[in-house]
Image (cartoon, rainbow, N blue to C red; front, top):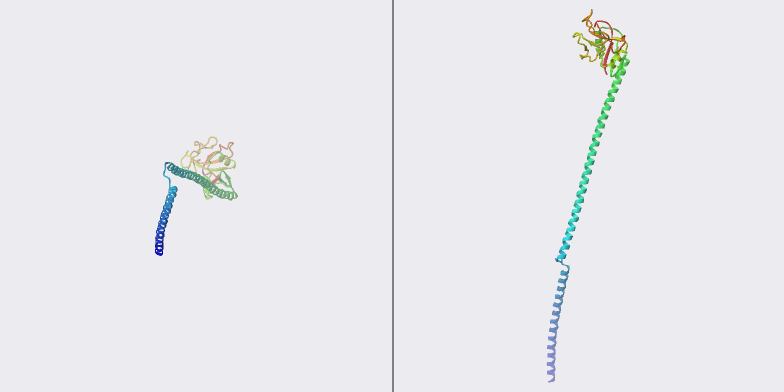
Length: 261
């Protein structure tokens, strides 16, 4: 009898233990759910704490940050633009200076070339002068003068000058007149009116602009009218600017040739 009761008690105990186990299992599931919900809530709080705050204060902070960024960008752009402008101006100044130096160099080169050419001409001129002076010519004011040692007519005298690459002397200035006068010759010069009486012409067909006639010259009256058509320089006159005398072209005189150097 007692065994049965004991047995039943054990069954009840077993039943009790099973019910208690089921309750504990349920508590475990509840605790697990609670723990999971707590973790989820914690994550939401953390997410909420790290998420941007869209409140009015935060919006102003964001706008200020954007404005500061734009200001910095504008400042950098202005600085770059100013640098670019300065660099361009400096480049233009350097280019202008380079152009000026190039022009100056070209001018100096042109001057050097001109001086070199002039030097060559002077050397050639000196050579010609030296050669002619060795042959009896005399030099004065860019011209060479040949003094004859024999006498010929005016036409023959001119032909001799032409064979020498020259012509009878033409007086272009008072200084040249003085130079020729001081050669102390009574000699033919390149002036005649043989083509038209009274119309005096140099051998280059130009008319004299200044005359250095002697006293009462030219005299178209008298016994030899129309026969004295050629001019000589007569050093025996007292005044060197009054030393021209016209004579018959067939008269024999010394002569003076002239050629430009």
